[in-house]
Image 1 (cartoon, helix red, strand yellow):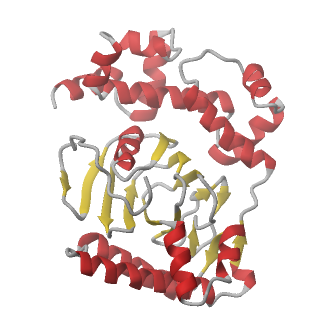
Image 2 (cartoon, rainbow, N blue to C red):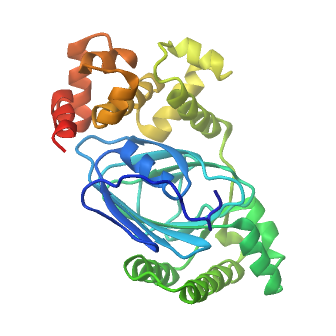
Amino acid sequence: MSAGTPATENQTLPAESTRSARGIDFAFRSATELKQHFKLIGKDFDAIQLSHGPQQGRFRVANLGSIFLVQLQTNQRLLLNGERGADCMSFSFESTGIADEHRLFNIPIAPYSLNGFRQGQVESHFQLSANTTSYLAILSTSRFNAFLNHCNSEYLIEKLEVNNALQISPSLHAKFRKQFEHLIHYPPITSQQCRQTTNHLYSAFLNAISEQTEARYLTYAPSPRQQLVKEFVGWAFSNASQDCSLDQISETLFASRRTLIQGTKESFDMGPMEMMKRVRLEQVNWILRSPDIRIDKNFKTITEVAQHFGFQSRGHFAKAYQQIFHETPSETWLKSVNL
């Protein structure tokens, strides 16, 4: 699905949610629930909660026809990993400009910066700081390039192919924030209004990227270790139910134990096996929240779910689960039944 194509899935939205032809607005209480919400706009991300405590977040979308504007609020540190799709780019930023734990491909973002616009990049891997609000403008690469050609600014395409971030002034950052916030809460209604708003945003992005010196562009240059961490996260989600040692994981990824350990600790403040456990706990949390999935997978007890993801000790599993989500597995299960 391209950035300009509205989602067509008939999905039941959770409580405290609204959805219209031009907008989506609802809460999420787990990282994997956020993953399901991103699917509404055609984005397939795995998500994981990196900090401890109950998740309370908000996901709002304004559909402008050829641009999706997303406002993402979270009280927990989150990681999203996956693919943003072909013919897709984004202009994204954190609203305060000072989020210490925001990272893009494991590289800390610069204060007051636009991020994620590198063309030709299909993969996506980004972290969100706790207690922050982030904005994403998701758009079609080919359509934006056509606009650049129309404005005789096709020379900028080369910059967008090699750079993934741009540092802007605090005043321009504040202008984008106010503009995005207004559009999220008051999206255009008619097709003509959407086209006018889209063209206005294209012009704003063009002005931002054309008025900057070379020094303001931040080249996309993750180190081999940072690339390894992204590859490891993708592998972890694909193999969450497999019982693997650190040596086996390192061998599979053609990396040394030391490099993998250093990379995950730099990026997530935890080693690879702890991160693997966190991924498994996230998967368990999602199934305990989802009666339909339990029926589909024929899980009748919490123990069956935990054992499926490699937790053989009930006591160890319950303690680790409560430490992350601040509730017992039984409490999560009962909440899903009582919805």
